[in-house]
Structures are given as structure tokens and as C-alpha cells.
Image: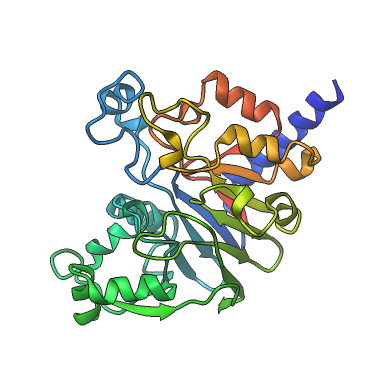
Length: 308
């Protein structure tokens, strides 16, 4: 009974944080799906068809924005294939006539995280000198491979260097990249710690397994107020006929088990994000969604606001 009461209280507090437009800096969720979005291209199975038939159920690839209503700045994390719609959502939340775009922070070179840079280019927005923050291998990849190289040559984007565990200060907010193990075919992979005046957030949309990271995920959660974590797959067997070890991610069930000893207040910091089209957490009415919430965890939704 006490647990249910605590969960109810936390749900009220969380709903308030998600729905209210905060003063000062806050995170704004623009997309929650895995790289290819939901429904996924070429998928006409039962779990994808609701998204094709009802546009309101579609979800963009994972992206968040850092908005500061005092400094009048906005910063994008990830440039996804859904960038046009996500920039429009950001425009509605923080209009360009009032808010300056500080830049774009990239995590790595998988399509859902950087391919949207193309929309800044000569054939699309024709943007000028948009700061794009990236780690060394990511920068080298963009500088030396078309079509991304043209963005640099035409000054559509300006590459800004990042270093592991070295903070970047932007108008009262600090952003620190943290190297994480992942399939690094073209670039290294990072997550970010984002610190505002009052609260902080951990953003790790992609990682292989928590157990092979040099950092204890349970311990780092204790040091932040929000943790937006890789939830690509809910459980084993989610990809019938495929060896899921070939696309390693921490299963949601594994993450919950790894954090099961944390008290409810710590578990409530977790927001699962980056969900594959097969992940039942994309369905707000699924048994799995209800189970995750019953354990005190949260599931990221587009339009959520998390005050910093």
C-alpha cells in the first residue's frame, strides 16, 4: 500500500514537471524512437500498422533540446532524419525571433543521430555557420566524407571540438560528453551530462551494455536528477530470427534489474528513450508499459519538459 501511495505521489510530481513550461533552463523531448522512427520503413507488421494508419501515433527518432527561457537560447541534441518536423516543434516551443540556436550536439555516426545534418545544407535550409559539436573521430568523418563534407565547405555548419569529460559552458549551462562503448564503425560514441542552475540530466541514447562501461550506471544516476537512457529493446527475443547480440543494447528488463536495488526516488529519475519500433513501450497501454511504471521508472514522451 505504501509503495502504491509513493508511486502515486511521484506520478503527480512527474506529470506536473512534464506538462508545465518551466522558467529558466529545461529539456524538451523532441523524439523518442530508435534511429528509423516509428513506424519503421518497410515494416507492415501488426505492431507497425497503427502508426501507418494513424499519424498521431508516429514517433520521431530520439532528440532532445535544451531551452533557456532566460538566456533566450536553444540547443539541439542529435540531428535526426526527422529534423524538419523536430525543428518545427522546437520553433513552436522556442521561436527563432526570440531564441538563438546555440548549436547541435551529436552523440555518434549512426543514421538516427546525425543524418539530419543534411537539412542544413545547400539543397535545403542553406543554413549559415550552425555550430555542430562533435568528438574527434566524428569531426573527421564529417570533414572527409560526402555529402557531409560539403556542409563544412559551404559553411552551413561549423564543427566545434569536444573532449571526453571536458565540459562546454553555454550561457549558464554546462554540457559534458562521456565516452560510452558502442558499435563505433565511423565515430566514437558519447552520452552527455547536462547541468543547469538547479538540476542535471544524463542523456545516453545508445550504449552496448551497462556492464562493459567503466562507469556504474546506478552510481551515476545518484548524481543527477534525470537519466534519459537507452531503451532500444524491451526484452530478449524481440527480433524474431535475429541474433540480438549483433545489435547490442541494454534491454529495458536488464536496466531495471541493474537498478532494482535503488530506492524509488532514484528509480524515478530514469526516463527510457530511443525505443525500437518493436518495443512495446511505444504503446502507452501495453502490459510492459504498465509494468515499467509500476516499478517506478518513466518512459519518455514527445513534448515532455524537464526543468534544469
